[in-house]
Length: 196
Picture (cartoon, rainbow, N blue to C red):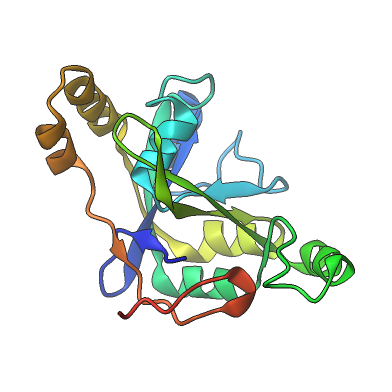
């Protein structure tokens, strides 16, 4: 499986959905060090814009009414992958269930692969990565990795309106471009080499 994400030379973009009060403060302060942001809980970041739309119902679900695009350092993602464990047991990645459970308890990052979504939020054959951060990983994310926070809720609503109106080409053109990230193979996460 490959990571598809919007990225440039130094950063990549992940998405999170928040209650409007948290989102507006985060954009204004360009920081997640805020009242209401619970650094003690696992926080999930999603490189796939459409998977974020699926999860948030196009920014309509309670406490997910605002969508933030967070540019983070590429070194942050790479640290996360090196310190991650799959969120469920996979025989191809773990010696046995005990080894997986021990890894899961020790790892500050969890990786989950879920079916990618199309414009109608229907599942696609390939998968999108979800990255769960806890403990040290949350601290690094909040204090070191995030370099820019943008509210993209209006974009989400514009694309949704185009989809609802049957204007799929225009909707597709408005989507963020997500390319295959040049990640080396990390067997315990079931990644395949990006180059092919």
